[in-house]
Length: 536
Image (cartoon, rainbow, N blue to C red; front, side, top):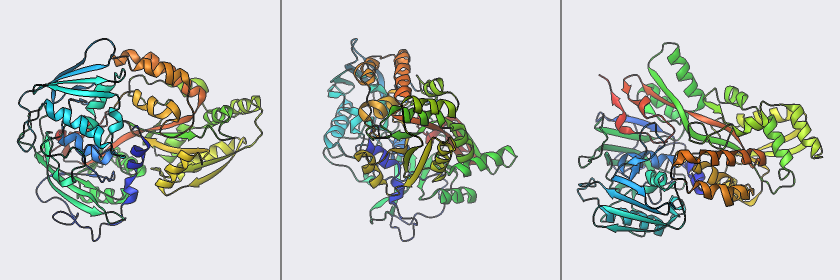
């Protein structure tokens, strides 16, 4: 997503106590399976805020996609937004600075209140007014004003061309809230939320964080009888359970305490389930597919060592992604050779095209041509990784095996310190993950490589920031923007402010009597609870 706050939210599970013993809740402790026959999904993407104005992480958006409507949505398997609460939306004029939507008639929130254009205006203005430090308001920065005409017409006026506004509105940043329920200037408590999506919250149970703050532990949803959208529910009740550790989630799946998991199992566990399935064991099955979750090795380009492009290019020439994917991540990820992942329009293989397979001779030639003293002493810092320290250890091994680098690996376990460290330029090289807000190449290039990006690499190329990116934002036809994004990816591979490491595969594990998981695993990042059923 497009801010360092979003990156911090991705690891908020680390803020929660390692046990739920003694945790308080709305109605009862978070234990056991659901006695009411709900389909139960488990995740380790712990969150703390569910109000759309303050929610900007996987754990909250997983829920919001199913309980709120936006003007637009991402259909399964498609990166092109289509109408949701809107009947139609379009840019008017040729400069992509005015966007008009007509809402469907008869829309209602789960409390029976009508959903009108006034609620859309209120939701956008509220998001921008609250401007929560950990919320997604930055996605709406291009909106100058939004006006309603009658109950069904909404017009957005933008400060500059923004052809990806439809994709932003299709994310949970565009969730429409009830102006009669949500305060205009502050967040609403988690247990008071009202949306117009296919489900409504029936109950919410909490668990305690390290600091004593209560965060969602179990959220039970029931079918919203006021919902008038296109989605057909294959279940009437769906429960989302939050777990603190991947091992606890796996144990719950093995015992049937949960029916399915999202993509937050430990890599080895996902790979083992898949191997068992291929061997004919059917108690737990796996639906695997593409994901927009990516990981990068970022560089401080203002540092005396990593500020030299030759050093960064040499690392790019040596890094063996295939070995990392095979030996460290048990093939639960696939090598990534560009800042934009596969499955997203505009993706190319810029890094492979420039550097090819790992080659020590070529790396040495790059360094000697730049008169870099060998071996290069390089520090590599990491904080969180699905494979823990094995990832950085393998990178160190590969670089040092060339004889061209001496690598010191350090873990900064405190995420807040890690975030402050990269902002302050305290690290030379550091690994970090990224998950997209919406499936458009803009959501990788703009936040990662322009003006230092969310990683604060210090790198900027005017060809991208001043010319190509603004040009891409005028392209309402996103397929037509592919050539421009190819140029930006090629420039990034040349400058190497960061190196793409891998793109995660989605490994959704589920009990054998659960159906529909395969139909909702795709690069949109939207998991559709309504697609999930239970066979007899």
